[in-house]
Amino acid sequence: MPEIRQNSDLLVLTDARERWVVRGLQAILAAIMVYGLATGQLGMASNGALTLSVTFVPAILQRTYGYSMDVGLVLWLTIAVVLHSVGALGPYRDYSWYDNITHTVSASLIAGVGYAVLRALEVHSDEIDVPKAFRGLFIVVFVLAMGIVWELVEFASVVVSDMVGARAPLIVFGIDDIITDLLFNTAGAVVVALWGTESFRGLASFFRRRLRRSRGR
Amino acid sequence: MVSVEVLLEDEGANALVGWFAIGTMLLVAGLSVRWTAYLWGCFAVVTAVTAALPPIATRDWKCMVPWSLLVAAAAALLAGAVWPVVEMASFVVITLLAVLVVAEVVAFTPVEMSVRFAVAFAVLTALAVEAVWAVGQYYSDLWWETTFLQSQTELQWDFVLVTVVALVIGSIVRWLGYFETPGGSSA
Image 1: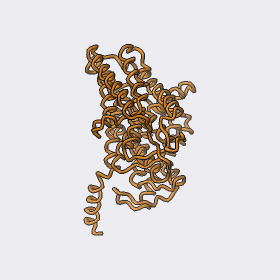
Image 2: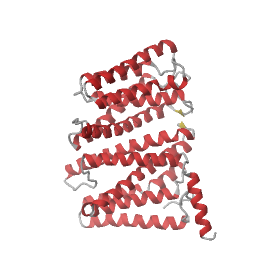
Image 3: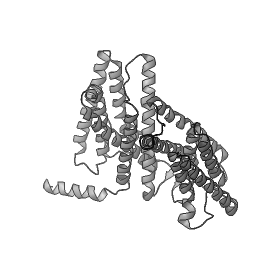
Image 4: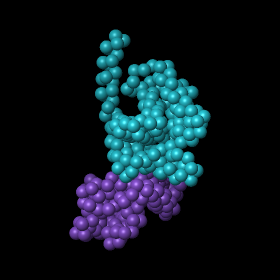
């Protein structure tokens, strides 16, 4: 488990606490995977495995590029995949509102990943040089594109599990579902684009100062 | 990093052809509306506006990307308007629109990128445009009683096809050396 050194713009958790929360969430995902394997439910097992591996992306980014992802972003990413994973166990079917929660969360998940990839490329590679004013365009494109890639992954997972005879780890619920995903994605993209071009920075530091004052720090 | 540029021999001649292409796009838009193919009409207008953005923004009528891209886009728009059953036309226009956006960003903004990144980014932009297009199709079905999205599987195959077409056209664009570095090489 890597050291996440960089402090968050938006969170006031310490690094150590954040690490514990993330570890706890990863443990949940690992438990889902193990339970799935133990009970022969391949769909559940691959669900757990897939989502668990996503949580290691920040670590890989750091190892490869030396890029420490924003701590708040790491936490958000982990929460998002846990909600997805847990949802596949039942809540998706049992509660119709659960879908709305995960739509919003997964949209910002994809947006966050898109933002992280862009920042990593910008900071640690020679391929691109983007002035801050234009960052928004790149983030929106990245996020929308990744939304389509996600749809491709879902499509492929259904096709593959059909062939293998297992229950699909990711279930698509029709055209409405896909379009809703894309729309939420776009909204998430715009939000992250504004965040990325630091339109929120003033707001974030304002809240941070208030929180510090109220805690008497 | 050696940054990509879009190089032109004769700006005036290039611009003339470019404006002609834009005119064709607007013609397609008009025809589409006439034939109640409203979504395609919107598509044609968006492409025309994107192509005309640099000259309008800089007030220099010669300020245009190389003509081949604009002519290809106009041709694909025309084909899609005349033969609407051919879905390939929309994938081609989507990709060409994406390449156009990247070309304009590279040529007319302070953004710098390598040839490799420009092509990769064009592919990603094509996927992004497809996302917008899919949403457009959905609401067109809802409001204008078109039948673009018949089934979920069909929509998912659309995504696959757009990706394939974008990769193919991206490779062609790179091979043609549409994006070049000032040394003249296409890295």
